[in-house]
Length: 309
Image (cartoon, rainbow, N blue to C red; front, side, top):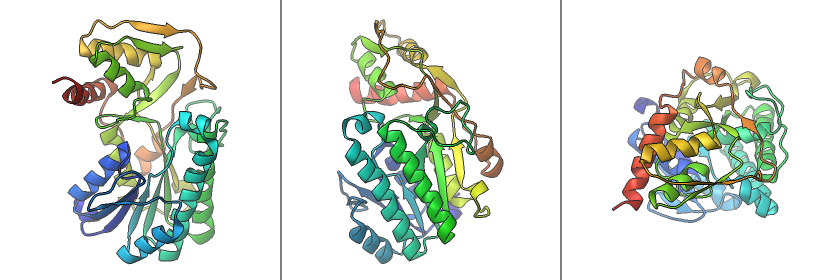
């Protein structure tokens, strides 16, 4: 893909996050002139900036003559939405609004918006792009609002916006230990018992390399700008319950760890979430390459390098 990105001016918001960091590095390897925004850290190519500051955001995009914008910044955890709904809506919605408005004013060639399968809420899986959003919790609702906002800008201003709705992404480099896979691997490698709430919730998981490939495919594929080609689901094609994920990690690490089962379910937890990725396969020629078994092996290997000396 390097000919598609070489010397292009690209901005990644949320560049210090798990997915944003991987995407930033991938674009650098592709030969792009890439910059990143982060609320928390700064580097020579990563600027400490909050996307809810429109004036700074717009000035930067104008100055660097950004061609392609990947918008990944925002609150990304269901639990954060429960604890601080106001901040969740402020960052996710207003941040997206600022990105879209600046993209409109500066005539950016392509805008990729990071969304989530959570927007489907209580719909019946497998979720399709044509399904209505049915969110309930603040995080899901903030993402659904941002998703609709992006569609509105695309329709009204003929803006080249593409929206990726991703299932749970996992892999090396995820330091958010409130998520199931990092939390479980860390506990197992440290010889600690693993707590399991419920255990029957069914989810679909996507390895980080496959997620990055999905972002790149959305950015380079030339397709008509219409509502049929705007939203894409990205799933890993393999589903597993919380119990199965925990058991797989224990087996792959070879540790004799006990699982402490907690009978209560997590607050407002959905029983089942997975998507149809047929559209992405057909239009973007994208499909996941790393199965769950191999992905977990590679992920555990990375965490071992962090915690087992």
